[in-house]
Image (cartoon, rainbow, N blue to C red; front, side, top):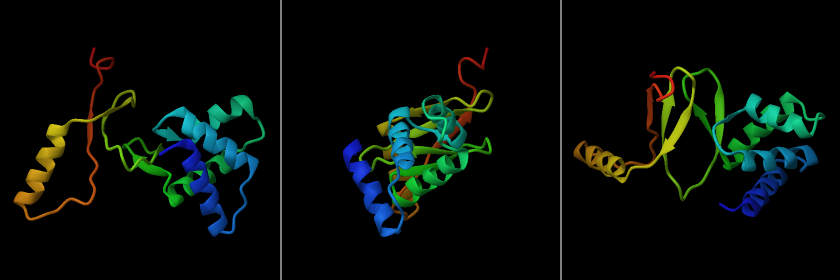
Length: 144
């Protein structure tokens, strides 16, 4: 989804919820879209504080929750006790490799895995609506 469409979707969501589109929310959205994925509230807060010391942690946290509610972000839990957020993109699916030592997260795609999941589900009479694959282990840097 384009950044302009995402921004428009968020503004429309705020209107339907009776909330204001504030400059702080716009800054948080811009940084979220620019920063990449798998951001915790703290990650995004620290990135924002570099350029704007007036944005508070609670504002970042609440805004990330709003992103998830309106469908422009998805919450992810990778077993480290932190909720992380990544931009929603209905056209793009990926899975994750998570290092249990350093917390590194690698996104990957493999059509063989996608095909096998459909095959396994079908063998059990299931049709897949959605799925999430997360593989936990040690990254090359931590395996040394």
